[in-house]
Length: 157
Ligand code: SF4
Image (cartoon, rainbow, N blue to C red):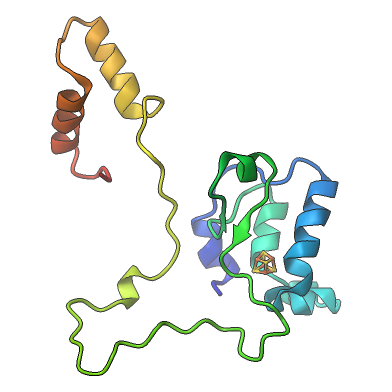
C-alpha cells in the first residue's frame, strides 16, 4: 500500500461519488471490511486509508478502477488495494518464477498502477485530424495517426 504522498501524485483530478449515499454504499462493500482502513474504523483517523483521504479531497485515486461505462456512471469502483480483514495473510504475493525458468527482465520496475486511456476520435488524434482535413490536407486517418505517432515519441501506442 502506497503512502498518501505517493498515491496523491498519481490521483486523477476528478470527483468520485456524486453524493454521500453513493459513498456510504460503496464503502460498506469495500472500506468497511478492508484491512487498510481498520485503524480509521477504530478511531485512529490519522492512520486510516490514504485513498479515502484523496477521495475526500475531491480527487480519484489511481487505484479505483472501472471496466464498464455502467460501473463508471454508478461510481462502482474496484479498489486494487482492497484486502479483506478476515484473510489470514492479506498481502498479495506474486506467482513465483518456476524453478529453472530464466527471467528476461526484472519484474519490479513494472509493478504498480497505471491508468491507460484509449485513443479514439474524441482524443487529440481525432481533433488534430479534423483540423488537418479542414485545412485542406487529404490523407486517411490511419496514415495521419501513423505520422503523428512517429513524430511524437512521448505518446503511448
Ligand atoms: S484500500 Fe481501497 S477498499 Fe481498502 S480502505 Fe482504502 S479505499 Fe477502501
